[in-house]
Length: 171
Image (cartoon, rainbow, N blue to C red):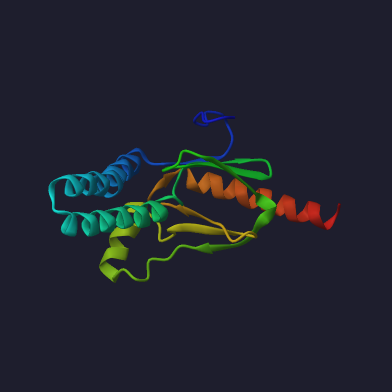
């Protein structure tokens, strides 16, 4: 499949265009901005100020880069394999459906009742999506507000998980 965007009939979820634009803006603002600032401070400020400030900016960018590295631009289901492209690194990652050990709903309990009511109205559901947990400890968040095509994808994934479990029972 390579790095091409999936454009075939496999069940797939994608970041909504507005979310993709916001994500790219955040990458530029939170990752590139501090690094450019670090270089500027190193060049313009005395070393006693410039070096600690530059190190702090690089550490900030590295921490946010690590946090952002788990985001996916799209995820597709191809038989017993989940395949997705990471948003930040553009790397294609494959995970086996049979390696899913848990799926938990994403909750927004930390938000107040007003914020949750607004989300319910905007999303037309209180279902925020799911986080999948894999045998190797990795996770995959499928967030309704961020991704399009989630309901059809989750239905196809549930069917594939049932088939995978049934096949494991009767080899």
